[in-house]
Length: 480
Image (tube, rainbow, N blue to C red; front, side, top):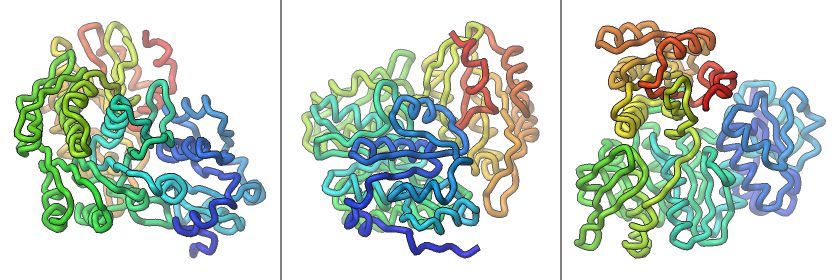
């Protein structure tokens, strides 16, 4: 079917017609980005409602605490949508679906959530985009906390749930921190979300190939950043450990670059991470500044270093930044300790890319050096459940003492791609001396956890969904 985009609105049109949009409906609202955007628009004074096919934690848990009406998608038809002034379409809506045709033909203006954020919230702010293959969400929350500790009532948009606060806030200071995803904006806007965020500055934590369902190569992803950089007036704080970032720097020499990788002059030196936290040194104005933080993991040392460098370049006093980093919190599902099961510490983490898995495993082992690590991994993103990282996953999981692969049967949506062979991955781990098995449903997963887990272990669950339903089962109620 051919798309009908007569009622699709871009950012300039939405900004001009802002007064027309009283009631806004978020179609497929339970994604981390859509849910946070809905909260932000509600705070901005709009009447916000939404719908989704299913409501998964952690966003589902947060939405229950808001006054945003959450409808079932099956109850939404064309007549229902006509009750609203604007429809915000999630990028989980396929362009060839009946849902897309219904939205297009109902007569109500529609757009994407990156468009509405850029046009109704982010203009006239100093917007700091935190981008990269890994660490976007964590770094956004770190920078938000640091700005707050430094006296700024900053606005923020975090693609995840944090304890004790909304996932997004408008704020009153000039700064607005925003997780800046390279995934496309919607089926009718096939370009990266961050290109619509009115960015002034960018912190770029990493740049590797991912999202193979929409990108064919790393060069495609580089092109999205290149398009953003052409209009970026402020700082670019970037990790130079990645070849793609070097390429972007060479193409854009006039930007205000500051590199902070392990081999960079601006990067963290004498870094140490242990069970109680981390410490590192940054050079600033020809002086060494020593930082201590409660956060564990070398990847988080890099994330905090990037945020600290941005703040120093913005003129904040070094010793005040040192004080600000001492006590920080993590987003839910990022090294989140859920409690204990059969005496083993249970940790929930979102990692689903090989590099992210390696970094997370390293951090957990640093935090629990005397425990055996059992890693449960559900390869469930479009790229993770494809064969693209077949070899890389085997390498990234090697440091675990035991591995349970939660093999979701959902086929990959990567173009011309093959599914990840979890049985082969299990065999490769076994050959390299790692205790490993493949669980193909929740019952098998629960049985294997019960067989292997005891008080000598740490149970690390890696999944960006529910891990075969584990987080929706009574397993949660048995964690103490």
